[in-house]
Amino acid sequence: MTNKIIADRRLNNLLIVGSKFLRPEQVVQKLGALQAQDYMQVMWAIGLRTPSASLTDIERAIVDRKIILTWSLRGTIHCVPSEDVKWMLQLTGSRVVGQAKSRLAQLGLDNGTLERCREVITEALKGGRQADRSELLRLLEEAGISTGNQRGYHILWHCAYQGLICFGPVNGKQQTFVLLDEWVPHSREFSIDESLAELALRYFTAHGPATVNDFAWWAGMTLTDARRGLETVKGVLFSEQIEGREYWMSTASVAQPSEENSGVYLLPGFDEYILGFKDRSAVLKPETAPRIVPGINGVFLPTLVVDGQVIGIWKRIFKKKGIELVITPFEQLGDSEERVLRAAERYAVFVGLPLLKIDFADRA
Image (cartoon, rainbow, N blue to C red):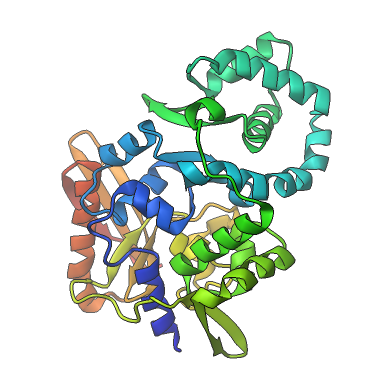
């Protein structure tokens, strides 16, 4: 299996190819979770995989409680299916919070203070009410709880991992918070072993070909737990050895993209095609990797993918009358330039704005 075949299979399994008839919530369900620390980027991550849906359609799925945004895997915000959010938190929350114990102590957020925070936030949100971050931080300050020095962020983060709150609908340009139990009163319940198996099956079906190390990194769990989950579902997966490593995938994996596939994609920042794997070398050259995370600060830029390989970055610029895009390739595009233009048009349609201009910056 070459990098080309790995890339083609991942493009299909991650629904970048061939998902035109899916609804937004079906995309999230099939992928299991999509990193969502940047709201507009994850909207495009879903929209890219749901060509028949607009930005409004995806936001409607959030309002209708079919998709939940909250802190879950790896200590960061993800989109997850509403029916899965609670067992995912049960599976991952205690380890993530445990890893942050020293940081919480540095900030003076002991158990008593955090309990008082939960009381204030519950009182503010109960009865189906919604409040944005600034409102909740103001209420905490009024209750005598300092939110400076990153304390406010960690308070909300901890409350989310305790299963108290999640993100609700957007109000203007601000994401709101709601009480999780009110927002999602019914969800599936799994034991820890069942959760490990379900997450492993979801991961390898959507992300394969992938290794158990990839799975452990993606889920933010120990390698021991990742192996436990994989062991349970091996019977419905198949594996191939590549350079001494074992790659797992669904038996229904499609080896080649469909004939309608243009082979060119403008992926959002933090997309699962990149962030879904610890080892990204099959689709991203090691010497290129620093260019998509400038400053090595954890912020992944939107990427240009041609024939399965990351060969550039791009950015959008919103104007009063439309949108402009700047494409920065890492190599010559050749006859792919026309296909890049079509991918840009698709993004403009998704955000509902005319594409005013597309610039090709000098090779990075």
